[in-house]
Length: 179
Length: 233
Image 1 (cartoon, rainbow over the protein chains, first blue to last red):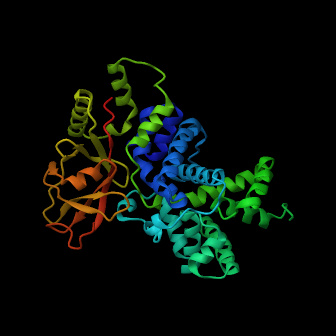
Image 2: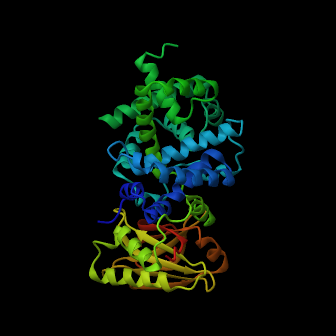
Image 3: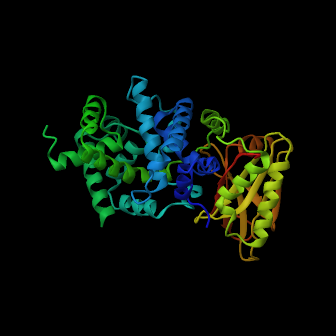
């Protein structure tokens, strides 16, 4: 039937350039948004998405759909590229807060909800089980690439509290997903 | 630190994947990863788990030039097949045309012909898909005339109890209504500001009460598709 993102990735592994373009058109806005949230620079985010799709093309064969969704596999590449880019610039802290309004509430927009995978819906249920501040801390760390210190500053909470919120959230999340 | 402690290994793997492990601690952990396959598996598990969140990242349309840059870096296609051969390959590789009804296949054939015969100027297309990733409509946009046309790949079912509304989602802004769909093909002439945004936007179609959304926002999004430069294969 119609190709899922997973099927498109598998077609990329077979050298199908049209599948890569289709995968790009399906996933690039989300991945660009993800990179922009962490890097806060359109130029850097463009570079990261470009490099990521070159990696996708080269490493598509290592995608294994039994281990996770295509989007998780793609997000993993993009986020790791973001952290590498931050490190190459010799700084680990984000640049500025001008671009950040859209990321204050990382709830999915209506346009994004239509295509959510079963795994993403499941994760959302597990996130909803967390208390508000721990969940917010985890999402700030994920979507904006914030450190413990930066999350603490943003939420006006003590550093030790934020650390234990995030650490406990990770443990609870894993438990919930394995239920 | 005792890196054999299973709880510590789990915690560091999770924090590495989340990105909160930074600086020296991150580099030290990467050295451990280099010769600890089991630790790498733990990290991979966490990365795939957490990056499921990528699906709900705020969508921001990248500039059209980004795909062109990627294509340039990929280099020429390995087989320099003649034009007809390329078309045939494209036909085979895009499996989504399969499984559609006869009428839709004709529409797809028309689209392929349109793409093949269109003159060499940049126009844009979007394939709008449903939650199961089935293509439902194709949108075409010509920046010269600023005309956006949206065509159903399958005959729309008559449904007087609802309207379908077309939305433009651009640059992290709230969706803007482009009007209601009328039958199997709808054309909209966009004002200049919306025309400028459409090339890198997402189009969405929502299910609405008759006459369209009462709130100014989409009620239930049914189909979405990113606008991309027409591949003109």
